[in-house]
Length: 324
Ligand code: ADP
Ligand code: TRP
Image (cartoon, rainbow, N blue to C red; front, side, top):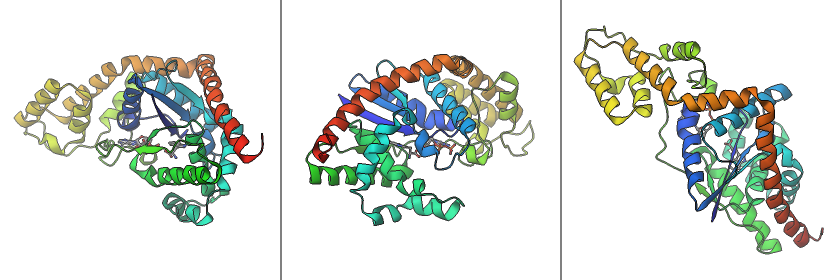
């Protein structure tokens, strides 16, 4: 049984890019009977930038609801908030800090990037990779699916675990990253990478009217309705081909090439596809967004299960450190 673990920052309502690029592939991985998945909201990490408690809570709810909506099975797997196990995560973080050479952290690419860009360069940003390593080795994870930008953090996690093992004996499983190079970049309404920070995202959980408005805002060129159009240069077509069936995509391609089919028609078809395809997901998402208690219950169950595993590891760790 392989342990697959990943953390998701509490950064707001997941959009179509997050869902197709990260959530659905991870849910698929978690459905493999040979895997056990640990999925947690990395709200302690989000604290490095989110300073408002209400925003933090809302983001956490939206992220958790989206994972449940996309079919993450919390019975088979582990689903929890890092902050509710903060004692264990940060205790281990301290132990790992004492194994981590200062230059490893000061040379980290993501720290350098953030300290150039952000006005608030706090110590949390600096020790961020150590908390991430603790998140991973606390559950003895074998594989960690992450985006390319997290590659260095994963190398550091493995180095910290190996350094600890060299000093104190074989306590930690050494984690390996799972980086899917083939994951495509989903374009946003302006054609750039879909991202919360570019305000070009499509929120599939919205109601009919605002969703249609969002789809209508997709950029298109000024080719007149009657003229043939090149589907391969068009954002609406690209998005449609990511969510529609093969035969539907082929039909849409022919419509573009034939002419007499406007971008308005294509956007209407994309809207209808999103509206019907994600009907169940939207329902579940909105259910958990409205029923705080139901979401709390799922998370609390997950936190109790996760705590058992984390405590086993920490008992072993405290023993070898002479703290038992
Ligand atoms: P955002 O750019 O909206 O802030 P994040 O950086 O929080 O998104 O990404 C969360 C996850 O979603 C990551 O695994 C990331 O690789 C994936 N993801 C984000 N945007 C896209 C996109 N446009 N296409 C594919 N995957 C994406
Ligand atoms: N740093 C990760 C990101 O920004 C989030 C994260 C925190 C994480 N802890 C983790 C990812 C442990 C994988 C494993 O996306």
